[in-house]
Every structure is written in C-alpha cells, then in structure tokens.
Image (cartoon, rainbow, N blue to C red; front, side, top):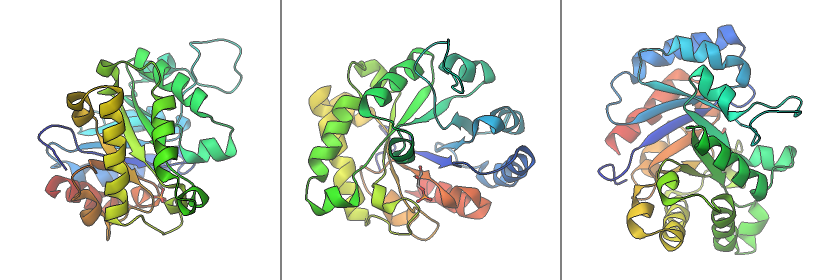
Length: 257
Ligand code: 13P
C-alpha cells in the first residue's frame, strides 16, 4: 500500500456482538496491543449501545470509535433511527455505511447509502462506504460493472474534498463470514478498479488520496498478503476483530505492509 500518500486504516466491525461489559473488556485487551501502531489508524465500529462505553474506554488512546450505521435525516419521526449529530455529539468519528448485511436484510439501496454518506460527511463523520459483488454477479463476470455502478451511485454529489475523508471498503459479499477470502490478487484487482473509477469521477490526485480497505474473512493468517498489495490500504474486519490477538496481528501487518 502507498502509506506515503494515504492513511492505512484497520477497522473492526463488531456487527451485533458484545454487551457493554464485554465491549469494555475487549477494548481493554486491544488497547495495549495496538498502542504502537504508529501511522496506522485503528478503529472499532461497535453497536450503538456500546458507543459511549467504547469512547470512554479508549479515551487518550490511538483507537478511534465508529458506529455501524447512521440515518440520513437530521431529526424527526424516524422511530428507531440514529442521526449523525447524535453520533458526533458522543464523540464518534467513523461510521460504516451500506454494509452488505444492511443492503441484504434491511433494504439498504445505493440511494440511501448515498444519502447517509452525505449526511455523515455534513456532520463531520468519516464514512466507511461498503461496496461488493454477490457470488452470482462474479460468476456472471459483471464484478467491474457492479462495483463501478455502486461507487458512482454511492458517491453521487460528494465533493472531491469530502471523498478524501471517505473510506471505501471493498467487501465481496461471497467472502463475508464464509471463511472464503478473495485472493490477494482478486482484492487488488477490484481495489485498483475502485481507484480508477474515483480518478474518472474526480481526478488522479484525489483517487490516490482515498483509503480503500478490503473486507471479507480477513484474518491473522491471510492479512499480510492482502495488505501488501498496492491498492489495499487497510481492512474492515468482522469475526477476527472480536479476538484481540487476531485483530492486533492484522493491525501490525498493516504497520509492516
Ligand atoms: P468477516 O471478517 O467476519 O468475514 O466480516 C467481514 C465484514 O463484513 C466486515 O464488515
């Protein structure tokens, strides 16, 4: 990865796991392990109920806290939703947007991903925008079309200045929670495609400044090879982010990558 031009970011996506005491215990375990991560940005994206606990537990450390979703309206009659202002007021810095689980189970579309991304940016949050193809789409050889369409729609009307604050996570849907990882070459191919799409939409310098992560069964064993690729600037980690030692191994692979 080109650490000289862009930030390496390793983010855990805890999904629907951990009560508050469990969240605190996991962060206490992770904190000393990743304290020497240097230039690598370490992020834990946790359930809404854990945000305040996680922020308190990581105060004064190099761990940043993210949410796993955000609503696009500022406030109002949206029962069960959480606004970007509510997150920033807590001290949240990142937010995962458009994860395939939200697209698959909760009706998230590129239009709502785009709205959420813009709302997050307007409030000063750094969005981690997830894109990725289904197995069926890869088999039909339309990965390139699917990914470039998602990038164009999800980032519609996002300025060059704002896109530099946005993280893109390439998460092939067939690799999430399945133990099937994209090969390092497959990950690099799509991350490079995302960067060239950004260069067309914006310009080369802007595209070079955007952090692009890989996610999907990244673990302690396969992280070094994935993170050694030029266009893989970090990882969005599910299962392995719930194990302090494995998460730390991935963080340090990024330090060395
Ligand atoms: P796994 O690492 O468990 O495959 O999950 C990846 C993911 O969805 C991260 O957002």
